[in-house]
Image (cartoon, rainbow, N blue to C red; front, side, top):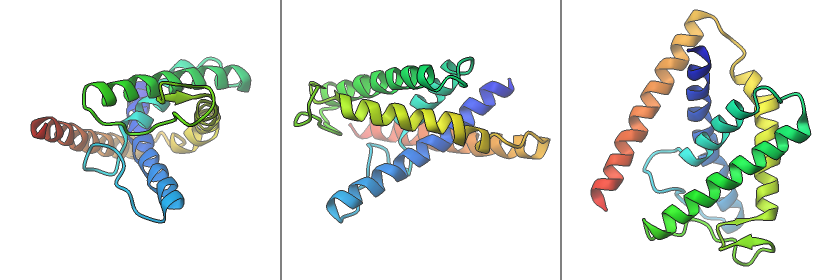
Length: 166
């Protein structure tokens, strides 16, 4: 039960952090604020799902940086590929395009970003996760549960709002 709570909490944290990273990255590239993602809130569930899966699937091999990196790279790349195809084909929105990059697949994924996501995810699960999950006293567990529940309710409401307007 605690592990599921931790994964849910990490999903929420990384969804928000991923959105922040995207906004900062695009501001750096364009000198303009770009609202990233399809949802209204300041979160991008792609990052949350990717890192929650990375955490769960590398739990037993976290001490081996190389294997953790390989697993994280595959997970992040598969999530990015599936999300890119779904957004493009079903929602008619191309959220990113790697067409001009070497070793890309349909513009949805490319080798250089796969490696970046793999390294970033590995660093997050090895070094940031322990900081985020450091405290396990009952008050902190309740606060993490409340935070996660409220944010997930916002995300679900936001998602239904998006679907309704399509």
